[in-house]
Image (cartoon, rainbow, N blue to C red; front, side):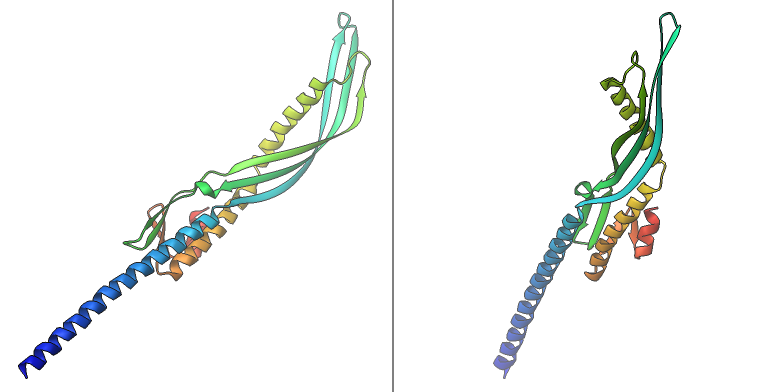
Length: 204
């Protein structure tokens, strides 16, 4: 009888030990799978996010030169219509994150700065010029440089960057949903993100 109980206890310990080792292995494999899935999602989010806007404005260019001891004035002018496409880009390949499998936490360490790109197109109307003061290549370069600076300043002051930030938070919300589904925690600036709304508020 003693041999039976000894054998039974030994078998039970063997089964328990096998179950414990197998269970730990399965948890490690599950944690590794979750980490791989989250990392893959971050890489997929790391595409270029673009918010696009279109702007139109009319400018008047004038140039006057005094000739012959300021006795004669030679003028030239042009009406310039500028149609500009503007984009705000986040290169999320530069998004810095940290995965902590031990605490099942994804930390967003740094979000890249937005980059404004503008693509102006110039159409010239009502171009008038004097024989002594004709339009030259440098005039068109001056027009493009000055108008581009003004257009950039105007777009910088618009709401296009805030719209791009909203788009960015939408992308990061996808990451929040994934971490929540897998039982992980998303953290940004030492603050635990507990809802999509919280993430959007932080992004303001």
